[in-house]
Length: 349
Image (cartoon, rainbow, N blue to C red):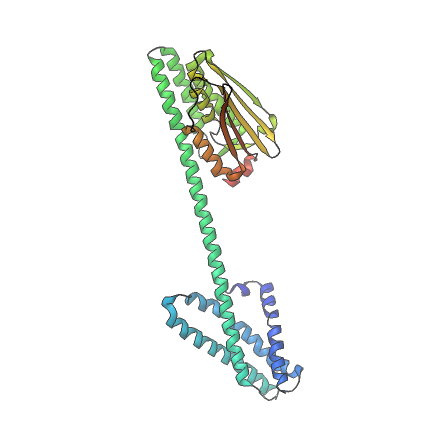
């Protein structure tokens, strides 16, 4: 069905658009000396009404005969025959009404030519509408493809986090097993607890900050077995931020990086501080850790930090930001991202 016929309001608006056409044809007949305005309008109105519906037929013809170079011959035949046939119907309708009203049928050639031009104009408008519809469909498909690609990359990045952490943990357990068997067994137990918690998240793309903090503490319990008193950890979390949604395992790679490149490189150990505070409609999260100034961190971000940056870009675009750098023996990673409710975040994912 033609979109105009699908809704009565559209059909009425379309028919109202034919009133200027009726007035123009009436003027042409009147200017040629053919009776009066009112008689001309009475004669032309039924024909224009019929022709208005005939001019909707290009909707189907334009779909069957798209504008392509390979269809030039068929296009020529179609848009020669169709306007002639449509205009013939229009002219015949006006002639029949003139006979009924017992009025002279003046300027049939002019009416026929006007009908051909109006039908071709209708065809052009239909081609334009179909081109606009195809463009919108292409934009929707491109947006859907981009969204699917983004979601796939987000899932791929998330899947890389656990294996990366697991490799490091197993390496630590292997080292402990030859030195301190009980501690190695305890680390295995805590590692299994962390993996159970992280796997329990399933396919969730985001969690409340409170759940992410619980996962981070579970990870630190694993590392605490390895470092003991050498690893000091503190938090400063504003209560208003705890319900904000964050991507799953966003903070754990930051803490892991602080342990690997900070605490592990200091003989006496070091401290890690995590803070989250609100600022307008965004959250600011920062991880700070001491490091050996004689062995400064690499200029480029590690795998974990690079993944965090990419996940923020994919999730929030330009609304998120990540900065990392060292100053006076302290390495600081700072994140800024919108504070979303868990419900809004799940709808967005």
